[in-house]
Length: 605
Image (cartoon, rainbow, N blue to C red; front, side, top):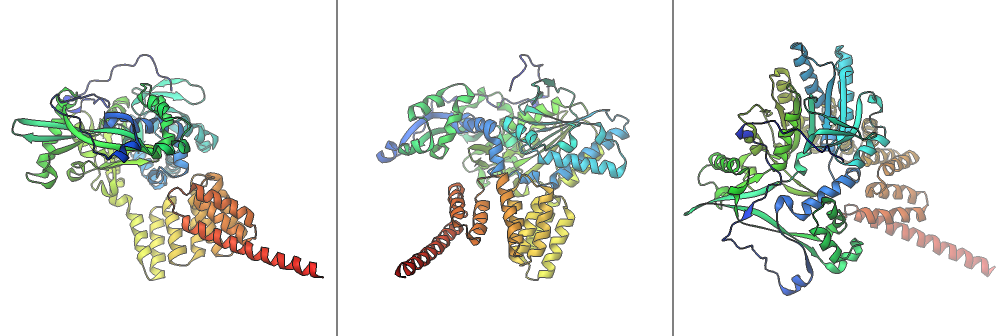
């Protein structure tokens, strides 16, 4: 993505909210020794060093993941490696739309409602969340007679070209075409929008009224530090990473590059150079160690030191988590992005954030929250740090009453008095409110009385009528637990109406309900629709093979089962796939034996 050659300086902010450097270097203490892992001779012979000790936020796997995301994010959404349904489910969009409406009401009441209301979603992913937001806001305005929807100018953005083009090819925003512009925006440079079709750049400083950034911050760089109180003073340590290629003999099965080529690519300075290492992702192995660093040279040192003080005060003297020092998870990339978003927004603008987060001192005091989604690395955002970092300055952070349960955290950033917006956000993004409908489904699944279970399902759907993930879970309960395929059919049909093009699981659920009602041809079409969304969906391949085998098309069933085995990466469906292979083989053997008998009897005549 092209960038302007000159960018206006970042607006000044108080020391307590100083913009952090997500890639700030720090030095190893002069008297420290880089720890060497102890491996036996056989292990060493099977390992090949790709990158020596590097700070966690800058290590090889982090860099590979960022480059892989730029080119293949759409694939990660399509095969559900990235669990996008946590905010693409429709229910979260309803909440976002109501907060936007509350902001419009606040500005209208102050006689300051803009003629054009600019909304920008950063990291739109599949685009479903934003599409549902626009649907909900349009419907709300039709009901209330407000003209807020008509005033919208919407920027649907992602850093991945594949994601933006997929939304365009699928005409995702066709019903809102006069409102939506597709393009690129990097959350770390949120003042520049680049239009997909024309390449035209738009300076967003002071123009965006509502930024939405859901499940974006956890993909940004972070570091893990630890402060220890010693007799001669405090000592800081940092987590560093060394990256190996294990089982080098298997490399040819994963990559077109030689070991020497991969080592050369890993050492290059250009970010894009490391992307080919994603092919060998299964062979990459990380070694993590902590050792002393001269953190005083880090630009965020004073804030990190204060955060460690606050962490110790919150946990209390003698807390087990402080036994070996005070861990500080420094969500540097997330902090910088959050600050830049609210600084880029208009003076009365807001930023809606939602992400995987560590919301309590106990969670933030351990080096947890690191995970991988396929080849992409992610780290839960230290929300304790984010809240403290922004406190006391012009940026105000609104936190829901209940937050952080199930690892999901929400924040509203404002710089203006917006009472209705604040109240609506605190109400709707409360974790108990967000998960209340799914809690009803959990009760339904555990219920032994079918009538009570069906009533709980009805109540859950009534709470979140646009949540297609809720419909999916409800359909599965109705079919598998209650043995009510007719009910499952109705619920699954509504689910695919809500989301016809982005979830093969929905079509599988509909196919299962139809099959259970002996509607085999219609069930087959449902499985075909699932594969049209994602041709490598193992569950859909197995389901379609099952139907084809029952129709006597064993050759085609074998072909589908072979693909299902290939794409069932985690072995989730392996048992069912192999069982169906065995059935098909036995049926074919019986058919072949019968044919040979018939031919033998004919020759005897």
